[in-house]
Image 1 (tube, helix red, strand yellow):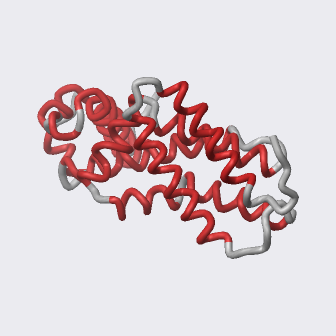
Image 2 (cartoon, one colour; image 1 turned 180 degrees about the vertical axis):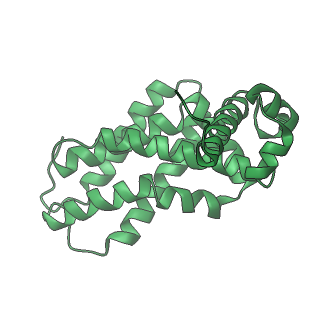
Length: 200
């Protein structure tokens, strides 16, 4: 006989339903065009339940953005196979692809900076995709593929370039072609950091 759900389970179920519903609606319609009334109706919960777990629409959006960043980081991590150089290129391409995927694009690149600001965006990125970038860059330095240097400045420099590239790619009418061109330019740029100047 199944017992009644615990408060922890109820909380998990309710917050999961709210975040999943909000994520779908934010991705489809954009933050400004989604109301809390619509979210609770689609999620099948009361507005009181929403306010029990979230301070309001912005707080719920923050939870959605955190989930999107985590999902993108999971995709980046899954691409990190092979030697550090191959992992770096694969991770960069995967980040650009995942960040500009339509359901993620609106939330990550359009609404998040406007709603929460770039500082919050960077804070989420620092604990997700940026962490993988730091790790692979440190491996490249440790293996002397890149010259000995502090890894944090290099990671932030590359991350900034990637974020700007993602914004540009998101607005491209020919994203697949431009992704290939971006990766060619990025690869050439990173080749310049190699101590062995390996080509290809």
